[in-house]
Structures are given as C-alpha cells and as structure tokens.
Image (cartoon, rainbow, N blue to C red; front, top):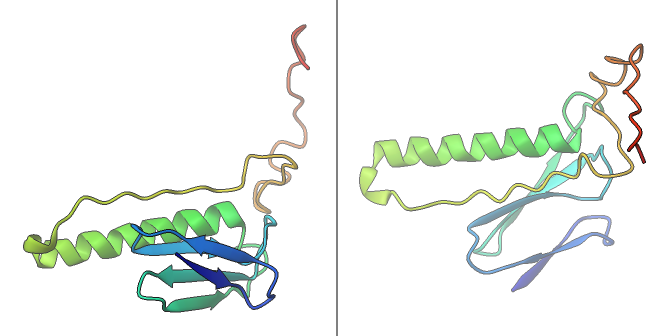
Length: 122
C-alpha cells in the first residue's frame, strides 16, 4: 500500500492493491481545482482544472473521468481482444450528501418550486 499526497500536503489517499488506477480530488469540497490519477506502478498525474464552474464540479468531473477511462479500456480491448479482463469501476461522488450544493448549471433550475411537505416530513 502506498499513499498519494496532493500538493497541499494535507490531502492524502491510501492506494489499495488490486486497483490499476485511482482517480480522486485534492480536497473535499464540491468544487476542486486539482484531481489526480494514481497508478499501481507508483506513478501519478496531477490534473489542474481551470474553469471553476463548468469543469470541476466534483460529481460531474468524476463521472466524466470514469466514462473516459471505460472508453479507453473498451477501445484497447477492441483492438486486442486477447487483453480482455473483468473490470470494476468503483465510483463514489460526494453529492448528494449534506451539505448539498447543486452544480452551477442547476442552481436556479427549480428556484420557483417548493417540495411538498407531507405529515411525515422531518
């Protein structure tokens, strides 16, 4: 097991054996400017995100990164079918956990609506 430390030297991730790649944020907010890829051979890539709203909302970033990774795997195995292996994508976005903060493009989408408050509303 290895640890990957983000440049802020406050955020670290334990890399568990059995995974070929781990992608995660440097920080724990809804909007992050740095994400990393850590590979089992000990190398890592730090991604800097410049657009503070459209590109780095954590749920969207991790979803898009996951889809891109799966497309890479499928493309590789379609070129060389003998390399096919089972795969698992463990995807853990922060949303919708409290405190909830919608993506910028959804923030005002339902501002004129009110959720119904039934008797069992807590």
